[in-house]
Amino acid sequence: MFAKFWSPGDVKTRLAATVGASVAAEIYRAFVQTLVTRCGATATRRLLAFAPSDQQAAFVELARPSWETAPQHGADLGEKMHNYFAEAFAAGVERAVLIGSDSPNLPPELLDRAFHELATVPVVLGPSDDGGYYLIGATGSVPPVFNGVTWSSPDVWQQTTKLLTDNQIPYAVLPTWYDVDEIQDLRRLQADLANATETALQHLRDRLEALLDGVAP
Image (tube, rainbow, N blue to C red):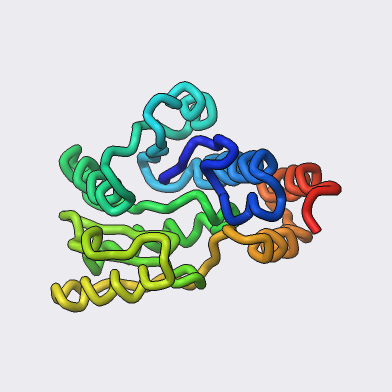
C-alpha cells in the first residue's frame, strides 16, 4: 500500500477546500489506519510504502505488527510505482499487488481476488469511478504502464489499458470502486458506513462523525 504522511495541506487537498486542511489530514490518517487494520491478514507479506522518507517512525508505529514499512523511491508517482514492483520482484516475490490509501472501505476480498487473477494473467487492475484505478497487480515482471500516463487525471485508466493492449499484455479487471477525494465522495463513504458491521469500519464511521461535527456542510 502507498501512503503519504498526513501533514495538513499536503494530503486530501480537494477535500480540504471544504473541511479545512487539518481536518482533511486527520481524515486521511484515519483512512490509512483503517486499511492497515482491515488488510492486515491479506497476502503473505504486507508492505506500507510511505512518503516522505523522514516520517518512518510515524509509519512504523501505525503499521505494526502486521505490516512492514519502506520509503517510496522515485521522482513521480509512475516511477515510484515502477520501483515498488521492481523491488518486490528483485526480492523474489512472485505476485505483487499495490493499492493506494484513498478507499478505506475497499473490501479485502478484492485484494484476495487480485492475487487469484494473477495466477492466470500477468496484470490485474481495479478501476475507480474517477477514471483512475485503485489497484494494480503484476506477476513476474514490471508491466510497462508507468511511463506516458497523466497521473491524477481522468485519463489514467484509458492510458494504462492502452499501454497494456499496445504491448499485447492480457489483464484482468476487478469490480469498480471509488476513491474519497471530494466532499461528495466523503458523504458517499459516510452513507456506506452507516450500517457497517465490521469493527474497523465502525471505528472509521465514528471518527469521521467526530471530525466533521460542525465542520462540513
